[in-house]
Amino acid sequence: MVEQVFMLKTKNLIDSLKWICARFWLWNDWNEFKIITQVFLYKFMNDKFWYEVKLLDQKLQNSENWEEVIKKYSESEYWLLTRKMSPDSAKLKPDHFISTLFNKQTGQQFWKLFDDTLRDIAIINNDIFSVKTESWTKIQLFDELTNYIADSSKRDDFAKAIINQLIEFNFEEIFHQKFDFFSTMFEYLIKDYNKDWWWKYAEYYTPHAVAKIMSAIMVDTPVTNATVYDPSAGSGTLLMNIAHAIWEDKCTIYSQDISQKSSWMLRLNLILNNLVHSIPNIIQWDTILDPYHKQWTDLMKFDFIVSNPPFKLDFSDIRDNLDTKENKERFFAGIPNIPKSKKDSMSIYLLFLQHIIASLSPRWKASIVVPTWFITAQSWIEKKIRERLIEQKMLKWVVSMPSNIFATTGTNVSVIFIDKQNTDWKVVLMDASKLWTTIKDWKNQKTVLSTTEEDQIIDIFHNTKQVEDLSVVVSYDEIKEKNYSFSAWQYFDIKIEYTDISKAEFETKMKEYENNLQGFFTESKKLEDEIFSQLKGLKYE
Image 1 (spheres, rainbow, N blue to C red):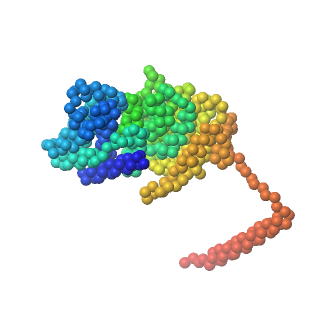
Image 2: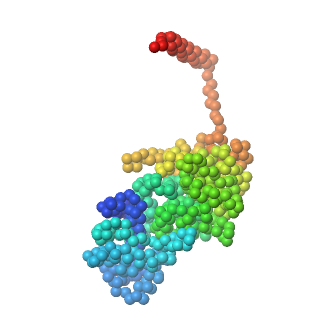
């Protein structure tokens, strides 16, 4: 019940912020996106700070007006209190509190105080919250948000409208339990922002059902001190799911993504999911052109790799730069050519797939979303990658997902699982395309996997089950015999059903067939005569 209340409060807050942005002509664009997510983060940090300091100081916990009490602390008292806080939590000064800004909004140039407050929070917490680019530039936590208002005379009203929304309630009561702030917020926003098809670097959102299946299949035993990597992280849905499966304090996240929007969302996701210690490993830069995570000159090897790489990204501007001696080993199957029509450039995922194989630790696992045509394609690069997975005995599972389960792309997808320690040399292939449920999502129909269907898929893989018309267990040799096809339906048995009937029943059925055929032939003769009659009636004029 508490979770539902705070989910509603989160959505109401987002609606209020969207309404404010619309009032100031910032409707559904990238600036609105940044404003909403950064204001939400400021609210989260403020309320979490309150929650933590009250737990640490009994005097604050018992006070009816704890904010006034803490403002009277000496500098050393305040410093000692904040030192006891979790290293993943933002350190705030009393001047940073939302309530402080609320009480000062009648002053001159309130917009400047608002921007200065967010900038000061970013500077104080820069070491733990900044994302690096390839040039080691640190991207700070907050922008000067009122600068997005073109009419400077409206900036005060904009800043006041935001603060008046943030003072309405607080999230304190939800911090004692796990509440997925990010998913609640992001799924609510994605309906608008993922339609931005004009962005060159479009992020595709991985459905929670798919992310859950991927993490549950990969993390089937207790794990400690694991490194988890996504070379095309997007907002981090896959990373968060596997981190939760391992436990956040037992793993370290690494990622790289070219998109500034994705890097911001991933950082927000890490902050909201107790993974702040991994923020220094979040890099905004091009993985394919220049992978950042290395050990000396070699690619860093990771324990777990998850990825839903882009399928349609145009990489023609970097294609020639990839064909180097240094990349021969990484792109062992080759570099895809750019088709004449660049809008058909659908093969960059093959580069990500090869990069993942090259980045995987010898003893661990990877899970990658691919377009379903990859699992049977006979073109050179696709087949050579599949051959590598079979010849080196790395393939463990393959599942073909239902159509349209990825609402943001019409491409049918499959998920391949790599396990370099596949000791039984068995591979489970599943065709889950018929497992789906339709639900109403606002005015639209949405294809999803039910919880029962998710659990069924996970159970089949964990227990290496063969289920009629759903899954098949095959050997590497059998896959070679099928020309390295990973498609389950090519391995299903063809069944011919026989029914015993008497001689009289047989003769009756044959008579029915004869009568039906005679009727078809008679009708066909009539049509032939009619066609010839019509042809004879045609005259030249």
